[in-house]
Amino acid sequence: MTSTPPPDGLPAYRLLTGPDDAEFCHRVSKALELGYELYGSPAISFNGVTVTVAQALVWPGTKIAQ
Image 1 (cartoon, helix red, strand yellow):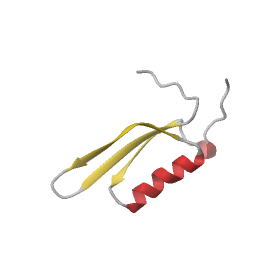
Image 2 (cartoon, rainbow, N blue to C red):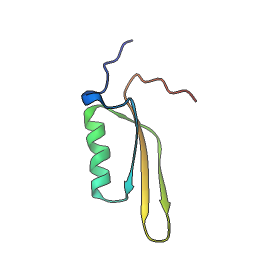
Image 3 (cartoon, rainbow, N blue to C red):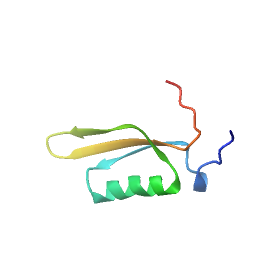
């Protein structure tokens, strides 16, 4: 099975990070609309002031070594 590459020269694997806010959620939603798939669970951290979140995404058909 041959998959098409991600659009606009984007990488097959992406890790989106940022503050836990609507903008971050929109970034993840846009990646899903482009065709990316969630990879694993989201991560969250708190440094006493700011909540930071991360979500990995992969392009369909991408093989990830584990």
